[in-house]
Length: 270
Image (cartoon, rainbow, N blue to C red):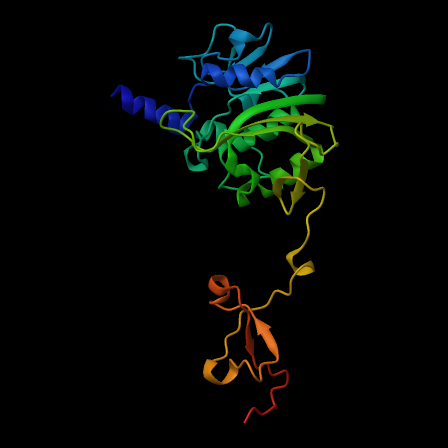
């Protein structure tokens, strides 16, 4: 029964607690002095380490004594912070509690959007100019179709200055793999990460690149449908072939094959 309740809390509240080593590392990314918010405090992993920080936790069973027991989406936006840090809840949209779902704003989202994405948006809105957001989340928001509008908005608001992929190691038991830890700075438009990568947004997908630009494939290659002749014994011809094609044997032999290419439908081969 206890295990069932634990799984239910993970499913509906996204309730998984942050390991100490992750808390320690995330705190090293904190640059700003000033007031701090932990919007999903859980058992207070960050609050224990941060003096005078504001904590918010929705679950009264675990809410730390020095935290506000409330839904983060009820917290007024006029409360602005220099640093927001934490581990937002990972909850599929269909499992979000109705009492929370009715408070969500969907201008950047749809009914596929995980709860942690809504946390990212609201947290950024609570940041002062040059405020920092330090979160651990799933990696998939970088390229997910459900976060395209969010990513474009994030890019307009500032720069992800630090980005650490944790690979497929299990940070949380029975919960999300492929996590990342990132630091976002509001109003920073340097587009450069701490390790010199370019922070780029293209069509709602976020990239970290060694170069400051992206190049279209069409600028380097002619991209066409592969050669489908319908009669290779006639069209594939080393003697009369007038155009070279990449074919199925090219990968194996590194050899292009010559084929007869007809430009005009009225041309005759025989």
